[in-house]
Amino acid sequence: MPIHAEHHPLVSLQAPEADMLARVQALVREQIGPQAEQVGREDVFAWDTFRLLADEGVIATAFPRSLGGTEASMLLRVRIIEELARACSTAASLVTGTDLSSRPIVAGGSDALRSEVVPKLATGAQQSAFALTEPGAGSDLAGLQATARRDGGHYVLNGAKKFITRAGVADMYVVVARLADGPAGSKGLSAFLVPRASAGVSVSPTIPKMGWNGVPIAQVCLDEVVVPVGNRLGEEGQGMALAQDTLVRARIGHAAIALGRMSGALQIAAQYADVRRVFGRAEGEHQGVQWMLADMGARIEAARCLVYACAQRYDRQDPDTSIHASIAKMHSTDLCMKVVVDCLQLLGGNGYLKAYPLERFMRDAKMNQIGEGTSEVHKNLIGRYLMKTAAAMPRHPCLDLEPDLFGAA
Ligand SMILES: Cc1cc2nc3c(=O)[nH]c(=O)nc-3n(C[C@H](O)[C@H](O)[C@H](O)COP(=O)(O)OP(=O)(O)OC[C@H]3O[C@@H](n4cnc5c(N)ncnc54)[C@H](O)[C@@H]3O)c2cc1C
Image (cartoon, rainbow, N blue to C red; front, side):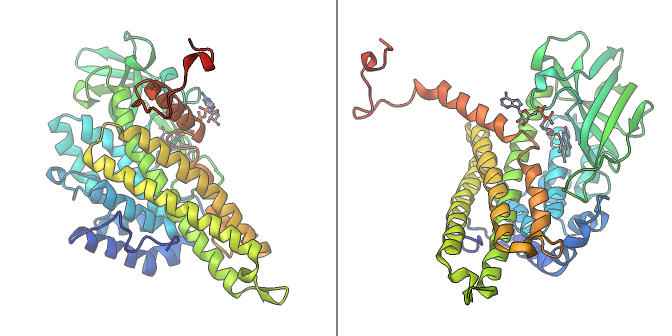
C-alpha cells in the first residue's frame, strides 16, 4: 500500500527490532500523534516528547551498546523515524537531531571523553547540539571562519555559529572550527566538544522560524573559549571528515522524515476525498483527483524503496552510501514538498486551516529541503559523481557512441 510501509519486502525486522518498531507505532497512535498539533503550535523545546522518546529507549537507538545505547540498524532507525514523522515532524527530528549532534562525539571522541559524555546523551539526561553553519558559510563549508588556536594543553575558540538547533537547551556543542595556523579550505577544519558552561559561550534568544516547531534554533557565539586538548574530536584536520560522516546519517534521517510526512499527508487526502462530496459524487470519484492521488502514491512508493535501500547500504557499509544518501535525501524531500502542497489542495479551504495537519506539514516540509545540504547541493554532488564515474562505466556495445559523431575525437 503506497501510504504505508507494513509488510514491505525490503524490511524484515525480527525481535527485538520488530518489538521496538511496534512500541513506536503505539506511542505515535496513543501519545505523540494526539499531541502533535499542540507541540507544533509553539516553537519551544518539546521536552515532554523528548523525555518520552528517551524513556522508551528511542533516543538510545543512535548510540553504541558499549556506551549505553542499543545501536539499532539504520533500517530500523529509518522505520522509526518514518513512523514518527507520519504524525509529528518534531518527534522525528528529536531522534534525528540527537544523532546529528552526538555522532561526532561517538565517532571522534577519545575513550575517556566518550565514556564520560555519551551514556548521558544516550539516556537523554544531557543533550548536545551540532554547531557547523555560520552566518557566512552554510553550503560552502570550506568557507567556515570560526577559529581554534592551540595554546599548550588547550585550544582557544572564537567565532559565531548560526541556525543551531537546540542551542538553548544543549549542555554541550560540537563546534567545527578552522585551525589558526592550519591549511586553507576543508583540510584546515577540526571539531571540538565545547561545554555550554564554558566562559565566553553565549547563546542568542530563539530565532523565530516558519515551522519545524518544538526544536528551536539560536546563534552561538564563542569569544576566547578555552577547551582542553582532550575535547578535540578526531585528529587535527579531521573536522570535515567527521562532519561528512555525521551528515550521511543525518541525510538518511531527513529522507525518512520526508517519507513519513508525505505518507501521512496522502492518507489524510485520500480519506478526505473518500468522504467529501463535490458535484454530486465523492471527491475521490473524479478522475482528476484519482490521478493526483495515483501520482503521489506511485512516487511515494518509489521514494520508500530508495530510502530503505539506502539504509541497507549504510548497514552494509557500502562505499557508495554517501551518494545514495544524497539521492534519497534530494528525491524524498523534494517529493514531500510537492506532495504536501497537493494534498493540502485536495482539502480545499479546509487544507488551509490550522485544524488540519497539512498546514503544519507544509511548513515543516520546507526545512527538509534545506537542512543537512540543500536540494541544490545534493544535485551538484550527484551530478559531479555521475561525471566522475562516467568514463569508468562498463562498456556496452549497444550504448557505445562513435567519438566522431559528437566531436570528441
Ligand atoms: C530550521 C533549521 C535548523 C538548522 N539546524 C542546524 C544545526 O543544528 N546545525 C548547523 O550547523 N546548521 C543548521 N542549519 C543550517 C542549515 O544546514 C543551512 O541553512 C543549510 O546548509 C544551507 O546553508 P545556508 O543557509 O547558509 O544557505 P547558502 O549556502 O547561503 O545557500 C543559499 C542558496 O544557494 C543555493 N546554493 C548554494 N550553493 C550552490 C551551488 N553551488 N549551486 C547551486 N545552488 C547553490 C542553496 O541551495 C540555497 O538555495 C539549520 C537550518 C535551519 C533552517
